[in-house]
Length: 419
Length: 157
View (cartoon, rainbow over the protein chains, first blue to last red):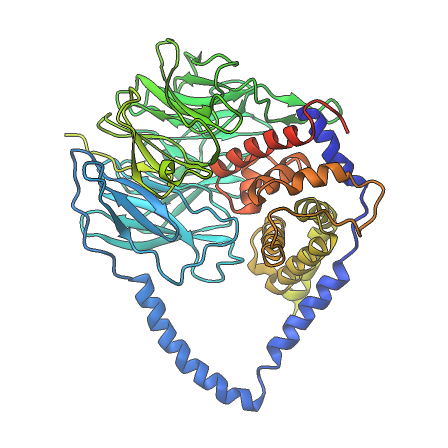
């Protein structure tokens, strides 16, 4: 059926598209003409007034950049806060009291670009630094940049630390809180937070944002096309400009971003059988019936399939248990519109279903296992069932399911520092 | 002036490479030739004006085009579903496909069109729409399933 869909869409090529270049040039000229009309002598007076307003605006912008945040969040190291981007702000949920509070205020003038998703947040290993993305301050509707912000959980302050030119996808922060990683164009970048130096590595066919290993020494990402597969590179080599890295598993089509185990000894990923176009040879993702969950050591050894291809296919990046022995993942449920949460041990045992929505899933967010192992969280929205929609907390054995929030988030647990 | 002229040449080169495909993708997305034409014209007009300030014109015009088309759809639509533009007559138009696409939510429709028509991998779809890769995968999975259901499984139209 996938191939039939491709065939039907290819028929669109037969439709003759109009030549709109001259119209585009004309529109651009009209825009320029309209801009120049503002500079008449009369408008100069208005321009002076606008200049005064701009000065005031600059102060306002400066205030926005140094905007006040709510009072510092007292770090609960026993549990860590459950955090997520909420529009243009960051919220935290206390998993003991389910108290929800703003860690970073969502500015009232913040405007997310259409289709935009700035949901990426990442904690340093000591639970102090939270990196997240926001639209760049200028021209948010057509901006091709994202602003990188850093929140300090100790004093509750947030500050901008740079931008991602172009679309940079998800952002990650090194365990020691000194480096950021993100995708740029056809490559990856490592940015020093202090000093702002940025080091880049060209990766042809990059298809996932890079993530730091738990020891901070390696970056993990996937490539689609060319050297298709899961890749690991040395952070120091990227910063020195001499990076190379092995392809971990042969030519696979990865279903979603690979995930480090908390102890750094495994990488989990979804593997799909590629469907190849007989004419072009291009590999297409995906066949819905042949996705399976795999793990492999970072050196490429020990590759192991954890779920059979006809079991519930993982449709989201999974989450590791804090002891690195189990993986929880969301997948298709019993019905066309339902989803289920499963848990499987890396020792090869059968997967266990923890949660079944029963129906009508409209939105779904990746699961996250708490650092103390007590909870698994995920976001779900069920059409027509607001009381069952929001950010769910559930025990790993499937018991005690409850709503941490009525809002649907991509939850990320604040790290708990090692003793 | 020289820089502006060079920039215009670059944008025109991008136009020659991308505009037809972008128009067809937007036509499939919006089910409306007028919206597709307006979005393509406007996105390239803005690209011409911004010139060298745009780092990746190709990705920029796709993202801008889908943003403009989506905004226009929201402005025009008061009904739940789109109705394919029957006034744009072309014998090669797969009306059954367009009608099925029109029944998908915006994000699913965008992901499906970019995947099946533009052959874009997930990350490229994310770049062109501004969605996260997670959102792209979810919308692509659900959109694909819904399309299969609407088009009758293995029946080939």
